[in-house]
Image 1 (spheres, rainbow, N blue to C red):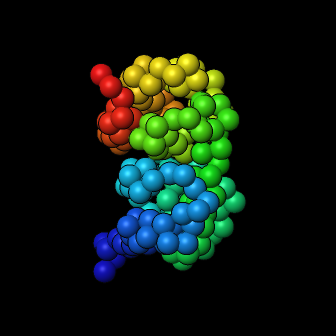
Image 2 (spheres, rainbow, N blue to C red; image 1 turned 90 degrees about the vertical axis):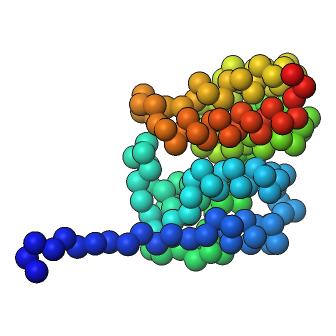
Image 3 (cartoon, rainbow, N blue to C red; image 1 turned 135 degrees about the vertical axis):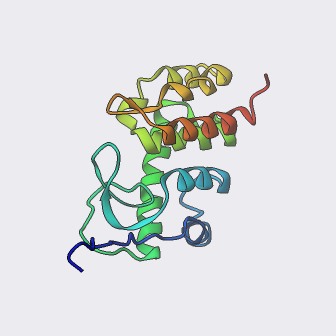
Length: 174
């Protein structure tokens, strides 16, 4: 007994279930499509209890970092927080990257990276400059540049950026 370690279980929740709640109850509040929600949700995963992400930021649910309380969150609470966070990312894309005029796949991909990186970093990015000029191809090619956290390349970010780039290019004529 004395050599046994305490094993803790992480309270995982279903990204698919949260997407279902969002699409059923909040679809009129966001523009991000199911494809965009799946991209963000699968990249972030869903955890009911607060944890520190690789950037050492207290996080809960599906990548939510604002006003995190030390408690176990319900699916409805996670869905509501996620919708609010997605709306924040969408507002940034609309304001700083000509978001209202972006094709849906481009909008979804750019909302995903903005959700992950934050508006402060994205609003002055080369990607947003390309989007404002209507150069979607160049903007889509910017995704791989955003693969680091605290200066370290993370395999999860490499994969996420590749999926975002693929979604972005799904509308762009090569």
